[in-house]
Length: 472
Ligand code: G6P
Image (cartoon, rainbow, N blue to C red; front, top):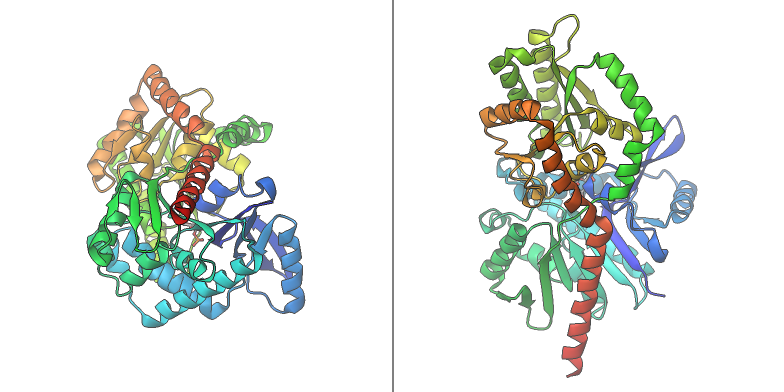
């Protein structure tokens, strides 16, 4: 039987070591939460890093066995690999470049070499597992070289690749010393998927200008093969969020929070710690709101969840300090005995508690500077059973291409963002419901299962076409 082998840097489960014991937890981020619902279907497996440095062979065996029961195969990375491949090339070169933060990008040959070596390590792990009938689906910027490495070893393999972050303009890509190798790495796939048409266009432009390969009807001819390129906006497991929001646990948590907040109205913000998310700008905009509209003081609070992420990378550590400082200053300046302007949580929440926050919030702020898609926006929409609530969404999140009934803002424009918060707080209920129901219809239909099917069908089609051409 053929199966799909999903490959990503991070597994959907991460393992933590505390007091000599190991705990297994769901991973954070859009990739893991989005794909988490589909990988266990039909004997599929997921290959990736479990977030743990194993201490000895016995522990390695134990971890392999535990993960195997959940259809996962670990690729273990060393501390040096995490430093140079993950914190280095992936998150200090590619991440800032692809999110238009080139001022944060570093260009280190040693990091590049580690990136090549780890992509080769993933290649060996996949080859050990994959049979000729299997489909290999590679995910995200940490593994851009993997499609070509796999192709070299298995010229006939069916290989898909999906990029979960933006693909930036050619002007940013051209800065990278290893730009050609990266593009050639991606072109090893049969099908390349992006969240939006805009990212796909940037990719085609980079391929044309750097490799001299042109595309017609979303097809690139490399000389020996045809590579299909297309946009597939990723969705969420809609029903899972509907059910979680309706669960007794979520309602219980909501009641507790409401009482503690004494019916203060809630604006919600949930992100991984990341400079691409616009968290500091959002805090300044909230401050501007309560300056411009003092009537909202003691009436509205910002409930801000920041999920710890990549804190070994310098830019993330200093962003954490900036946020701590801003929250402290704003709270100290405006708080009263009965009112806290910003409730700030620096940790992750289990699904039922997240759902209770989505239920509680009247307004959600999803205002990244750049974001491949942003699934939090879709989760908020799915959680609103009564269709009341307003989404404020950045024009530079992939989700804005679909969720046009949100209040769309430019996240750098603090004034516009403050006004959008005010507008959201005074929006009549019937307008809220109109906008929310339109967004729900879209998010329900283009859910993660529809997304997977579309990608897989297209991949099978590209393979079939290739096969027909070969036999003609
Ligand atoms: C984003 C990326 C994912 C990544 C996630 C969490 O969603 O697109 O590839 O897994 O962030 O980041 P981390 O560095 O913890 O894996």
